[in-house]
Length: 153
Image 1 (tube, helix red, strand yellow):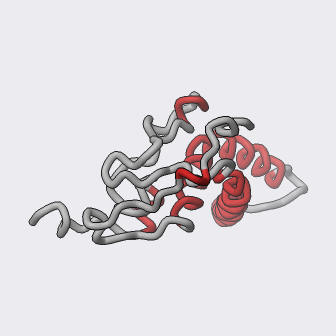
Image 2 (cartoon, rainbow, N blue to C red; image 1 turned 135 degrees about the horizontal axis):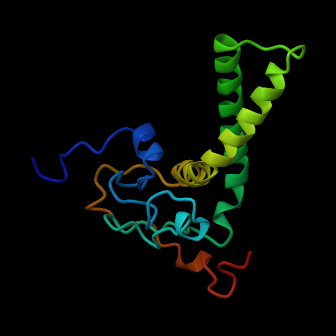
């Protein structure tokens, strides 16, 4: 089976693994997830497999804050339900406040992963999967990029 026929995974698995949305094979990030925020958020300029640019335009990833917020709300709801089913909730004996502390620590620990995952979801909504990516070149986005304004945040 050649590389063109090799299954590349589903949308969800490619997004959760931070793979390129166009070919679903290349890595979006240069390094593995870590606590070091500078290393954690370093993205490849282009997909190492198909050449899809990861920075589509200046300020492209500003919207990931909304995605990260949505993911954090889902995680909070899941931890609340899990806490309620296993320990229970009550303000009489401070179990609810213990959950708040637990949830805060959980979100801080998951923050590097949430930041990467929100970028992966964001780019996947703007770059569609191309099963024949070897025959098609990626869309040229050079006119949308301004080197003077890049990383100006």
